[in-house]
Structures are given as structure tokens and as C-alpha cells.
Length: 376
Ligand SMILES: *[C@@H]1O[C@H](CO)[C@@H](O)[C@H](O)[C@H]1NC(C)=O
Ligand SMILES: *[C@@H]1O[C@H](CO)[C@@H](O)[C@H](O)[C@H]1NC(C)=O
Ligand SMILES: *[C@@H]1O[C@H](CO)[C@@H](O)[C@H](O)[C@H]1NC(C)=O
Ligand SMILES: *[C@@H]1O[C@H](CO)[C@@H](O)[C@H](O)[C@H]1NC(C)=O
Ligand SMILES: *[C@@H]1O[C@H](CO)[C@@H](O)[C@H](O)[C@H]1NC(C)=O
Ligand SMILES: *[C@@H]1O[C@H](CO)[C@@H](O)[C@H](O)[C@H]1NC(C)=O
Ligand SMILES: *[C@@H]1O[C@H](CO)[C@@H](O)[C@H](O)[C@H]1NC(C)=O
Image 1 (tube, rainbow, N blue to C red):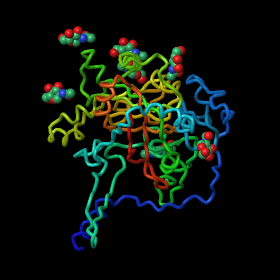
Image 2: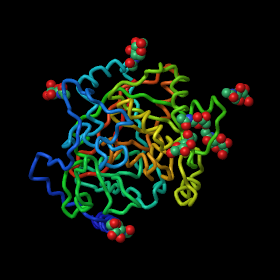
Image 3: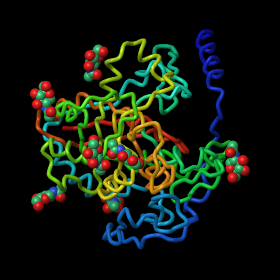
Image 4: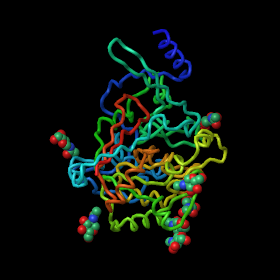
């Protein structure tokens, strides 16, 4: 018992961060703060659907935001693309009953790739006739799902300029406490029920056939000409996407990371020149993704898009993180383990599969392990 309380004390001192004291919001209905929104008809979901060029719906909204597209009080964003019929139709993707885990070990990264994140702390707690364990987790140290409180629009990361999806959060204190509101918390994703058809675009596999070599640890940007070529190489038709699809891109980052020596894995995050391969942040990429009506995107790299975040969108310094999360209410999955999945899909000549995601159900939460499972 003594060593156990020492461990817990050690955790308390390592994790001297802001403690969450959630006060579940008393009012269940959201008070909208924006005015311009799409006339939404649940019976005809895509009536009046704006093109990328038509975003945002009001000039006062931030760069390419989809505020109001699902209604001024909407909290689900891109997950609205998933309806019962989407999941029902996706059952056709289950052909073999082969289930594949897409999550890395929570302790896979010796030094978290963002070294400001504290590593996982895992301790054992013996009981009488049973054993427990305690996990203290920064939800973004391994495979992760970025919730809608994670990444607002901002200018120079100044908290006074933060703008969250549909402008539903007023102040930064509403996110980090001491009394956070619940709107846009990760519990929404947990309670929504995320399942459906997913498509893997294996950029790394395609690049190998094209003799394109790149270091995953530089800001190599994958563009839509390449993604279209990957889809074509995989035998997908030009119209391969369906509304509600979940798009996963294999950039080769995990493959190259796992190929590093343990020492090089440990020092990698401290490299001041460190960047990452990923989808190129541009209006071209965003338009391509928007038109596909995706519910969620994910990749095997740190941010889906390439890093550093040094691009402009519609002439404004913006990351795709800002537009996806703050603008479209679209979450991002990162550090997915797509190695086994890619190998098996190639062997089967397939690109699509059934995918389920189950985030932590924690009120006011910001991110979560995705608990992602593919079923072939
Ligand atoms: C999905 O099915 C449930 C249970 O039948 C139903 O309550 C819900 O309204 C359906 N949702 C949609 C969007 O059709
Ligand atoms: C953040 O923005 C506010 C309002 O423009 C300004 O007063 C403040 O100085 C800025 N803070 C920093 C750290 O730049
Ligand atoms: C890639 O390199 C191999 C070996 O040099 C060559 O046979 C092949 O034609 C090249 N493929 C392309 C697409 O350039
Ligand atoms: C993508 O990059 C290739 C060069 O790698 C270039 O030929 C192509 O035009 C680019 N496509 C877009 C949409 O920028
Ligand atoms: C793509 O087009 C073909 C032929 O027109 C059609 O049969 C198929 O259903 C379409 N696929 C999707 C995903 O819309
Ligand atoms: C793995 O590392 C070896 C030795 O550094 C290198 O030759 C090889 O190209 C790497 N493979 C991949 C897939 O990165
Ligand atoms: C990436 O996007 C930027 C615009 O944000 C563009 O200047 C650049 O050419 C793009 N890179 C590729 C490889 O397409």
C-alpha cells in the first residue's frame, strides 16, 4: 500500500495541471450565437449543400468555416453525415469477419512526438484477490481522436482570438476550467455512435511503386493529384466516395518511425527541424475533402496534414486543423496503425471496409484514444 500511495503522489506531482471540475450545463438546449445558417431539412440532408467556394455562409465567420451548415445550434459537425442508413449500408463491407485493431500501444512513443505532452503513467494497484491498474493519460500521446474542443481558430495562438465550431464556446475558461461548459465535449462523439464505411488511401504503398522516396520526418506535402493517383492505383472508380465515409490515409510515418532505432525514436521529438509528411494544407486539399462529405478523417502521422503548420488557406495563415475542427466540426484521427490493414487490403484487392470508433465517454473531454477497429 505504501509503495502504491508513493506512486499516486508521484503522479500528482507530475500532473500538476489544471484539474477538471465539470459542471454539467444546466440548460440542455444550446443558445445559438451565429445567425446565418443553411435551411436544413432532415428528410433531404443535402438540399442547399454549399460548395467549398460558398464557404463560409457569412462573411463574419472565420476562413472556410462551415458554421451554420448543420444549423446554428448544431454540435455534431461532420458526424451528422453518419445516419442510421449510412451504417446499415456499410454492413456490405463486412465480407470476411476479419477484425483489425488500428490503435498503437498507448505507450508506443518513448518520447511523445509533441514533447510538451507528458508520457503515459501506468501503475498497478493490487487488491485482495484481484488486481487493478491506474492510467494517467494525456489523451494525445498515442493513437488519438481530436475532439471539437481541441483546436479552435486562432491568430498567433492568442487565446483571446480562439473561435470554436459554430461559435458555441465564448471563453477559453469554458474549455480548461475551473468550471468548463460541456458543449462540444468528447462525450458527444462517444454518445453519437461512430461506425460506417471507411476508405484507405495507401499513399506510402503507391509512392514505393512510383519510386518516390521521402523522409516522413520532413514537411513533405501529399496533394490531391497524388491522392487521386493512389485511388486509381488501388482500382477505385473516380466516384469512389460516399457521404458519411471515413477517409484514412497511410502516409508511411508509422512505418518509418518503427524502422528507427530505439535511440533515434527517443531523440526524434527534440529535433528542432522535425516536420512530418501529411496531406498538404491548401484550398485545393480542403475543397477535395469538403466535396466528399466525409464524417471523419485519419492518418498514420502526427496531424493528418503535414507539419509544420506554415501554410495559408484562402490567403490567411491557417492550418487544416483550424478549418476541420473549429470550422467544419470535423474530428481528426492521428497515429493510426494502418500497417496490417494496408497489407491485408492489398492482398484482398480491396480499399474499403467497415470501421468503428469509440471515444472515451467523458463530459467536457478534449480528445481520446479512438479505439478504432476495422472489420474486413
Ligand atoms: C436511428 O434509429 C433510431 C432507433 O430506431 C431512431 O430513434 C433514430 O431516430 C434514427 N435516426 C435517424 C437519423 O434516422
Ligand atoms: C492577445 O490579443 C489581445 C487582444 O488583441 C491583446 O490585447 C494581447 O496583448 C494579446 N496577447 C498576446 C500574448 O499577444
Ligand atoms: C522504379 O524503379 C525501378 C527500378 O529502377 C524501375 O524498374 C521502374 O520502372 C521504376 N518505376 C517508375 C514508375 O518509375
Ligand atoms: C501535386 O504535386 C505534383 C508534383 O509532385 C504536381 O505535378 C501537381 O500539379 C500537384 N497538384 C496540385 C493539385 O497541386
Ligand atoms: C459510381 O458510378 C458507377 C457507374 O456510374 C455506379 O454504378 C456506382 O454506384 C457509383 N459509385 C458511387 C460510390 O457512387
Ligand atoms: C529502414 O531503415 C533502413 C536502415 O536505415 C533503411 O535502409 C530502409 O530504407 C528503411 N525502410 C523504411 C521503410 O523506411
Ligand atoms: C501545398 O499547398 C500550398 C498552398 O497552401 C502550395 O503552395 C504548394 O504548392 C502545395 N504543395 C504541393 C506539393 O502541392
